[in-house]
Amino acid sequence: GQFVTQGFVPPPYPYDRLDVFKAVASKFDGGVIDLSVGDPCDPPSAAVIAALSSSNLERSYPPSIGIEPLRSAVRSWMQRKFDIDIPLSQIAAAVGSKEFVVTTPQWMKLRTPSRDTVLFPAVSYPSYAMGATLSGCRPVAVPMTPTGGLDLSKISADDAKRALMIWMNSPSNPTGALDDMEAVVNWGRANDVPVFSDECYVEFTWQGKPTTALQYGTQGVIALHSLSKRSNLAGLRVAFYAGDADIVHYLKEVRKHAGMMVPGPAQAAGVVALNDDDSVKAQGAIYRGRLERAATVLSKWSGRNIELPAGGFYLWFDATDGWEFAERLATEGGALVSPGDFYGAGGSNNVRVAVVQPDARIELMAQRLGVA
Image (cartoon, rainbow, N blue to C red; front, side, top):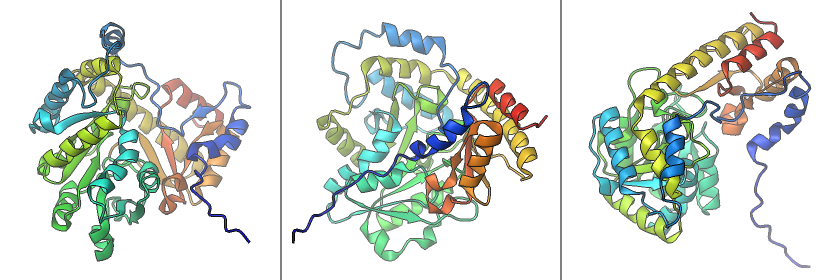
């Protein structure tokens, strides 16, 4: 007999699994109210759109590390936001943060072939695990503390030795929890494991002030940021990473060879977006209002006490059975939400609600559910 070895088969993309509920919800007059994907619905500023059409950067190849004005805008944004100064040589662009999350493990594996493990939060954005898998690495989920951070005490000595990198995400997607960044950075340094801190929701920090892992020094630390959420530019794919001089230098060189380039006009628009703090502040107030309204509506309808997150624009709560809750909401309110098992087995009782629909759509959901 012949042995057939089975290669990698991509699992169903999480959100494609909601198609059955989409069909149910779309029967409502006014259609589906989609609160499943964290897809911004509000317009970016007019100045950002104008920059896209007038940059003259569409003809030539853009620098992979980002044009100097973009890196300078990142630098001054970090000075304003966190009161830290990161040299320009330690800042570079990425083609959206998801691309960076998914491709970085393979580059780190090439740099340190003796290690093969990617550590990431047990309840998290699915791309941390998928990035490890697509890079031929071992994805190892780190259990969460009761407050929703990484439980570092649960990392085995063997996994720490084999770790190429550890991901932290604060404010967290999906939970909105804030992690103890200093503790994670210290653990990374003590174990010689680079810390990759995904901070793309940092502008929407509701408890305390926004923080970055780089406030505890750049040694062994990379912070990742995105313009998708803060500036409603998910379609432009503009992100950046900053931190440890050696790691940034290495990733800049590898990514140049791999052809990772943010389109020139998108970089020019990114400069305008990063220099505009006012629209981000206004956007934060909009999300805050939607979180409060959606929490009130869903609490009244479900009889559960749904609390506001510490950060981000998601409601995350225990629904006993995430799929059952999602089905009931699609059937009774025509709204689509994400069952918590999209974010790891630890989230199977939960539901994530992204408040990324205009206020009028959230009111329409309230109306359908009979909640004033």
